[in-house]
Amino acid sequence: MAQYKRLGGIMAITLAATTGLTACGFGGSSGEESGDGATLDLLVPSYSDATQGLWEDVIAGFEEANPDVNVNLQVESWDNLESVIATRIQGGDAPDIYNGGPFAGFAEDELLYPVEEITSEETYADFQPTFLENAQVGGTTYGLPWIASSRALFVNDALLEEAGAEVPATWDELLESAKKVSELGGGVAGYGMPLGSEEAQAEAGVWLWGGGGTFGDADAITIDTPENLEGAEFIKKMIDEGATQADAGASDRSPLFDIFVQGKIGMQVGLPPSVGQIESDNPELEYSVHPIPTKDGSPFTLGVADHLMAFQNDGDKQEAITAFFDHLYSADVYVPWVQAEGFLPTTMSGSEQLADDEALAPFLETLPDAQFYPSTNPDWQAADPAFKALFGQLGGDKSAKDVLAEIQAQVDAG
Image (tube, rainbow, N blue to C red; front, side, top):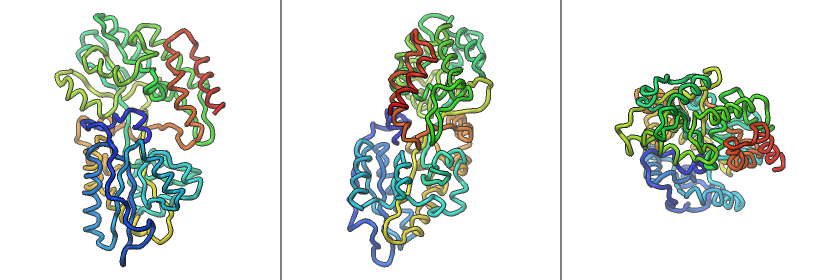
C-alpha cells in the first residue's frame, strides 16, 4: 500500500519481499462492453508473491456467480503503480477499479464515483465508521477501505515480572514501568522509542495523538499545537529519565523491534506482522499484546489503510462494479484474502469473523478507535518527510517546542 510501502513493506506476516508482477494486459480498449455483458478493468499493486493468485481466485468466483461480467486483471509493483495509473489517466484509459493509497486528487478532479453510488447499502454499512471517515473528501466517501493496519503495545512479560513492573495503560504508568525495566541493566531498555527516519511520523502519532493532539485535517496541517507539544515533551521525559534505549533519536523501528524480539526491550509499539516475526525468530519469547498507553488511558490506535476506488469511465458499469464490490467484501471472500496477505479487515463482519484469532484480537479491538494521517490534505506530502527528517531531534538537546516549530515551518514552506 502506498502508506505501507513507506513502512518498508512490513504489512505481510510471512511474505516474501514485494515484487512487481504483471498479469495479462488489458484486452481491447478500456471502458468498452464485452459481448452482451460488461468488462471491468482492475489495476492493483503487488503486496507479495501471493497477490496475483489471490486476485485470480476472487475473480474466478465472481465471474462464476456473474457470467455476464468479465474482469481483466493487471498487477503492478508499488514502485510502478503511480506512474502506471498516471499514464493511463492521461491517455483516457483509466481502469474501472483501482487499488491504491492516495485518492483525494482523483476525487477533486471528479474522476471517481462516490462510494455510495457503486456499493449496496449493506456493503457500505459494513465498513468501520472511522475508516469511512478517513476515505472522504468534502464529506463524500470516494475510497472503499480495503486493507488496514493498527498498532498495539508489545510487552516482554518476563522482563516486566523480573522488574516488578505492571503493564501500563497511561503515560505515567508507562514511564514508571519502563524505568524499572531499564534498571535491570545488561543492555535492557524499558521502552523501544524509534524516532529515526524510517517511521518517525508513526511514533510521533502514537505520542502526540495519545495526548489529545492531531496532525490536522483535510483543511490544515497543524503540528506546533499545545496538545502536540505535551506529547513531544513526554517523549523527551521518557528519554531523559532513562526509560528508553540510548539512541532513541536515531533508532529505526524495524531494527529496534528486532532487539525486542531478542528479549532486550521491555515494551514497544508493534504491528500485526510483529506477531509472525516473533513466532519465526524467537517463539520462546514470553510476551503479550495490549492497547497503546495514552495520557489518560483513553483508547486509541494509529490506523493505516489502502483503498479501492472506481473511475467514472464511459459506459454504464455501475451495476457490474457494485456486484463486484458486494462479492469482494463478503466475509467469506474478503477475510481469506486479508489473512493471506497479513492485514486487518476494514469491515465489521470481517472483524467478527476473526474475533477468535488470539494473535489479532488486540489489533481488531482497537480499529473503532483508529486515527489516521491527514493524507487527503496535499500538505501531508511535506509533513511526512519533515517528521522523518526532524522528529529525531527530540533525542538530542533541542527543545520539543523548537522541533515541532521546525516541522511546521517545513510544512508551511511546502
